Image (cartoon, rainbow, N blue to C red):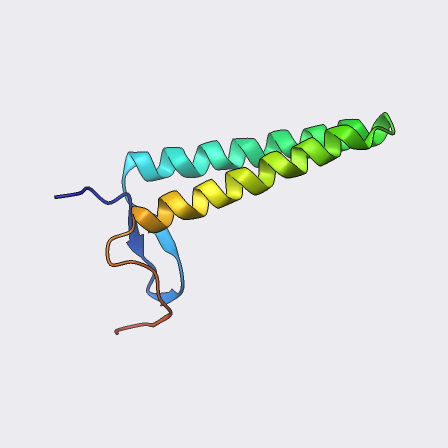
Length: 85
């Protein structure tokens, strides 16, 4: 029996973390986003687009990984919900 890290949202589509593993995943993703923002701002100050492009690539890969893991670790999968359905 697999352990799920997220539960389905009551309204809309997506999931909410319910275990420590889910919260760690969210916090790691948030740290990656903040680090990428720092790289973008630093590369803008140095007029170097290479850092911004690399940060964007890392952000895209991290976002795809976050969505995939949370989708796989959500009990019942994702679909649009209207409350009590």
